Length: 323
Image (cartoon, rainbow, N blue to C red):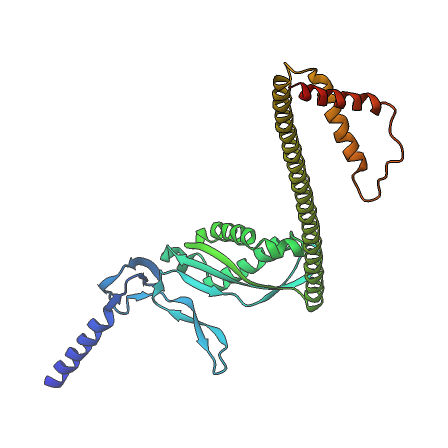
């Protein structure tokens, strides 16, 4: 009898423990009763009736790494539905562009289950359904673009693909947050052609920059020579102006001095004779001095008019003799 009670006690404990379910934060558990949906368990401590109620498992993707560092995915059934954002790395696939170039693309998909019930009952294999949906829509989008457009339109492809997937997966209780294209790899021949084109473009830009540099250098040199010539001409002009002003001032000073000397002579000779004859005689003598001055100058005749001038000089002498 005690053994029977012990067995019942152990069975009761196992029964109770089997019915206890602890749901973690950001997880959900779908509970079925006799194969039909009964309730969704939220985070916390719950108890279900064993053998009558049971969790409905769901397929999930598990990532595992091999010894050589490669990663591969494994599908497993789990009674707990992860409500956190999940990252799914799609395998690389070949896609044909609008201009019939086959390129290799792999993508990352960030999605989140927001309705556990729909994720269980609306689709049989949610990970595979999302993968196939992403691949087919990616082929359609890339097929509408040429190779050059595809290489520079990652953001546009990401936005359009996310919008299409989010709308299509809404009935599965899934929210697609974003899609990222990791690598777009064209064929080797196309890569070589693109590298040659890039190098040619770089050489062209280098040639243009060098020509522009030479052009600017020539322009700056010409402008510098022009400014130097202008400054030199301006300097010579100012020098000539200053030289002319100096000569003019010297002549004015000389003329004023000569004027003052003549006025003094006229004043001194006013009562003694004819000052004009004196001045004419003096100027004539100065002229004769200038004529005879010099190393090779020789006077071989006397101008006829000199007799009249000399008579004036004799008159000056007589005028001073009267004094």
